[in-house]
Each structure stands twice: as structure tokens, then as C-alpha cells.
Length: 169
Length: 414
Image (cartoon, rainbow over the protein chains, first blue to last red):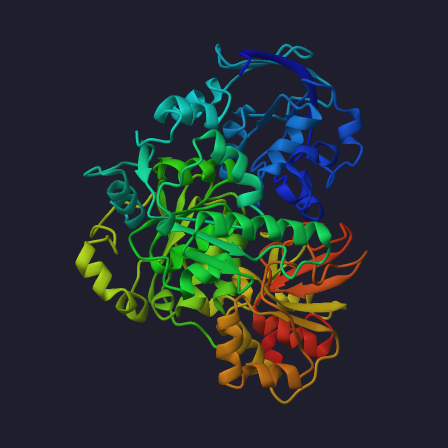
């Protein structure tokens, strides 16, 4: 996990579901190939237009629906460095953290416009809108979820916790 | 403590827990299927040392890409089968039903236990009084390697249905009544517990719907404290192991919502969201292209029997496709005459599985097609083309609508 991330905002609405992030018709594809279908259910041109480091911004309940982890992998492969939302569906949140993608909750995303430049400082626990100057506190990412993120994901975290041979902790 | 808190405390080896606590819990059962399972978890498992923590507590079901519609699907099934053979899993179910329903009908999901599954509808197993939680594939791999998961103890929201259930409603209408009132994100990071007279009267198939739909409310788990025949089925295990089956008397729920069933009409969830719920009457008359009965929420024996209650002796006007959730559902409904009534009414019966509901195969919707269905979700594109419309409804409403070719309140034909 890089402690400071910077990128342009891609703004979406409330209740963006995992069928929109990675439609079911792509579920039979290898996990390594899903980036080209990221957000295909909302905007098929997203993977071509997104730049590495860009940030997805949404309202409430981002990632609701299916547990498909490829929804997170698709965003990551497309270049998305973080997702900022007012709330996350819990499986998407865990999948994001488990794969080293910061899923950041802030109180209000309404002031973030399409294309605004955002800076996420996960040490200072702030999201700064460099376009408007607004600074918003990060409301989540404490305890175990932060530890997992610091390790870059749950596999590295588990190896650190229990050791290479899968021994009991 | 609520039942969910007691189950998590026991799994974590702690005397008590409080909502908001983060704990490491020992998992009683881990489940996965051909989509989330071997093809996704095998490489991760290797990185974690390649050993399974306890193969007797691992369930694998082939349900998503079966029957395979193309070679990609067939390759996924081949990978899944090869892994299951190599692992020597005692609980491997190959194309005989949907994982969630198999956990219940095979008695693998037990009250008072912690179940983790790589599928969002894992919550369905809460129907027996388990804490059943969905996770992604990589997290499941860590569970398969260690037998442990970290959980944040959720506050419990109690949903009560205190009066008797009218004959024109099903458990699906109850779940939609909750979604209409409280919306699709009211239970994020929470446990949803159901209680009351109407809930106690539900059989396991109906309880499964309530538990299943908890995830559409955003919940971590849905749970129904076992009672009646559901509790009696596990009498021996519960008394032998002391597994918790009820919350402490007077335990604190974060909030309590009570629904009066006498004022709930048959409901439908219109596109584009599961909480876009309205009385069937408000959308009645809408022309339909197809009707579908199936999925972990809507393809159980009870669902087929409810449909047959409407369809017996009549004839559908639009194609009605039925996907029984498991082979045992097929066997049961064959024995009691349900299947015959459905087939004579014009329904077409498919092999069990998740295909159409998950938008994978076996009944996808084309551009602008409108379907009334007992499936789990109505998001645009969920069952195929993004312009297709999915109206979620009870099996009674789907059957009544299939007869008319238009969205129809089942009270008109019951």
C-alpha cells in the first residue's frame, strides 16, 4: 500500500453493483483478463479512458450484489488505485482490502466532480480534493483491515500471521 | 448477547463479544462452487502452503457453469473436478444443485455454527440458525488454509412479523416488504434476525428466502433462531454440543422493526434495484415476454409447490422456465405430483444450477425482453442484456403472471 495516492476522480452514483462492475457474462474469463471489462455495465469505454492511479468515487453501497472478487481485480487491472465512497457493500470492501485496493469511506462525496484531482493520504487519514481544496477525513480503515492493507492484501498478511506452511496461529 | 453474537463468541473461543469487536473466529464449515472455487483459489492456496485445514469441513458444489454451455464452461468444470479428486473432498456435489440449497437439504449447515462461503448468497444457510457469511475467493483460500477468519461483530437488527401469513403471500413477499420499507443498504455491516409468529410458522424452504435476501439488505448475515421442525431436526447435535440456538433473554438489538402482514399485498421489485418494491397491483397489466422460477431464493420444493397451486389445471401464455434448485427438489416434486402439474400447465423444467439467475447461460434475456422471476436480483444486465427488465416476485405472482402473459396479482387466480 502506498501511503499517498493521487489521481483523477471518476464519479458514479449510489448502489453500483458488482454486475455493473463486472457483468456475469465475463465470469467465465480468466482472472488476469478482466480489466478490459471494468465497469462494463455502466460505461464500456471506462477501461480505455481511465489512467493509472485514477480513483473511483461513488455514493452509498458501492459493490453491492455478488461476491465476485473479479469486480475488484477488474478495477485494479484497469488502473484504479482506490475507491472512495460513502459506504461499501461489505463483501466488496473485504475483497478490495484483501487485494490491496484501498476502499475508503468519507462522509460526503457530493462535492467531488468528474475529473477532480484527488489525493488520498492514508497515514494522515484524509482525502483532499486538489481541485476544490476540500479536505475530508477518512472514516474507516482501522484495525485488521488497515493491517491487511499495509501488507498489500490478505495473502501476504496471512503468511505473516501464520507462516508459510499454513500452520495454526 | 444476540444469537449472532453468541455464535461468533463461541467460534472465537470468547466468553462474550460486543458489536464492533474484531475477533478471529474458527470456521465450522467452508463452502465454494465452480465459479469461486478451485479455478480462483488454487494458486492462492499454493502460496499459503497448499494444505487444507480440514477437508471434512469443506464443501464444493458445481452449480454455476453446469450444464456447460460452451467449452470455457466445460474447462472450468474439468478444473473443478480435477481439484476435488486431488483434494479427496468428502463433500463434493457435482451438478446436482445449488450450493446454498445443498448445505440446507444435506444437513451440512447446522444451528449455532459459523459458516463461510465464497458466494454472497452464503447467507442462505442462516435459515437453520447458523451465522453464514459470504466472502471472496482469496479470503476463502485463507480460510481453507487456516480454518480461521477475522470478523467484526455486527450489531443485530431484529425484523418481526407478528401476525399470521395470508395464503396469497410467500416468504419472498415478506423479504420485499422489508426492502420496500428499509431499502437496500439499511443493514450494511449488520446482522438481520427474523422472529415472530409468521416466521415460526415458516418451513426451512421459506426461512431460506428470508436468510437469503438479507444480503440484498446489505447484511453480513441473516439468521432465524431455529424453532419447531427446524430445531427438532438438529435436536441431538444441539444437545450434545451445546451450540447456541437462541439469543439471551432480553438481549439488545440495535433496532427492532415490526411488519403487519395483514397490510402487505403481493409485492414486486421492479428494475433497476432490489428495493424498488411496489404492490403487484401498481404494476399489474405490464406485458411480459418470459417467466422464470429458479435460483437459491426461488427454486426450492416449496416454490415449485406454490407455483403449482396457481397453475394446476391451467395453461401458461408465455414461456415459463423452471430451474429446480437441486436434484432432490426434482425428486420430491416428482413424487408429490407438483412437477406433473407444472409440466401440464406448459412449464419447461431445466437442470438444477445458477445459470440464468447469475446471467451465465440456460435462459439469458435478450434486448428489451421483460421477465418476471423468482431470482435473487434485478440489476440491469443481471440475466443477460442490459436493456432486459427483471421483475422480482414470489412464485405465486410469477405463476399467475405466466398464465396471463401480464404482471398479475395472484389473488386474482387463487
